[in-house]
Length: 226
Image (cartoon, one colour):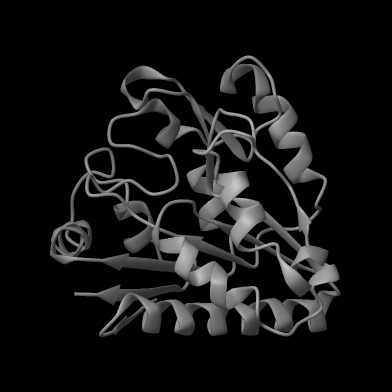
């Protein structure tokens, strides 16, 4: 269920991932008239977005959301929505529909129900999810030992502020794993060591990435830059 490909540079990996995502979105549009995918925030996705936005497909039939979001408005420089709007939804890709996780409520806990409603209104599961990973083995905003990792009901999980400086909203592990395809891109020896450890048996509470790598229901494409 896991296909691994190594690349010599982050840009080469980003191009390959963008091409694969475009193919998945095109296939979804052809088969159901609509494509729906989720993307991560952070530094590495910028490389992917710059290539993906140049892909020629019917962006008006594409719906995009986030795997997770800091509980800040789009005007905040740390907003993942801000990143997606400025780096992905440009040119032809501006025709895509974006569904935010942040809704302006006072906290993620207050905004969770509305977040669920926005995503459920799409009426289909995700065709693809582009994931990143942290040096602690987290993906989306599902961190080691955090209660959000065990949320199974609904599509959104509120992540309390705690040591993360700001509250977050994350897609639940269940909604991510229900996608038709998962795509993971990481770079560097530290994350590679975490990736190898996550492939070994153990608790997902220690390394959340195990939920992605040790499930068998959804194909996972792993792109890495040593």
